[in-house]
Image (cartoon, rainbow over all chains, first blue to last red; front, side, top):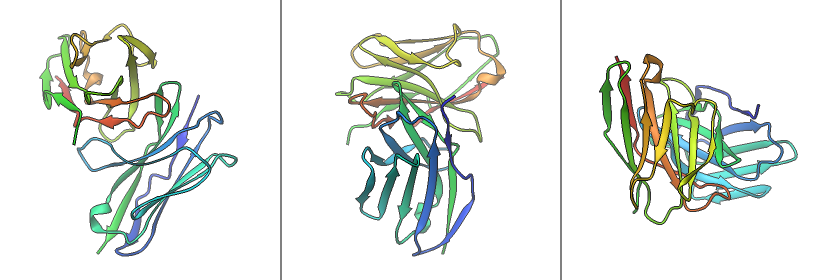
Length: 109
Length: 114
């Protein structure tokens, strides 16, 4: 059974600080990794994807991948109240995405 | 910016009835997906579709479910003989390629079975 694990939170971070979200996965053959943001009652929105070991930066977001440790993370710099949402980690395997349960992030003004 | 659209936004049906959920994927995308999310639970993969056939399906996607691309733009999910436990948000997604899937989601259809 292929699994993706995330801490459910909530993770509470002061406005302006760095939020760090983590994810582990079980399928060593996975090559593609995604972070989605989901606001309550809305659909998942793709915010980052990473395919290679190391860091990938896009604006305030940095995705980090360590395939040896089967670990993916998302850093959000200068956190804003609008970043408050559930962050879903998804791992691609055999034409489908395997999803974590998500981490609820709360940014406190 | 191109986006995936879904109709209806909310569907209420009685147990045992059939429903059809509709999706219009992004126009140049070739891979289509259906997911569901029961309230408060994780997103669950149902099925992927490419070149007019199913690529992969989950254990959830049993004989009660079917998918179809009836024309060049629509992608549908049919649920026969609905059950109370089919109540969920159903999301359609599409991607340009399958190599990783940068999958883009529609706004979802909330299905309520009474």
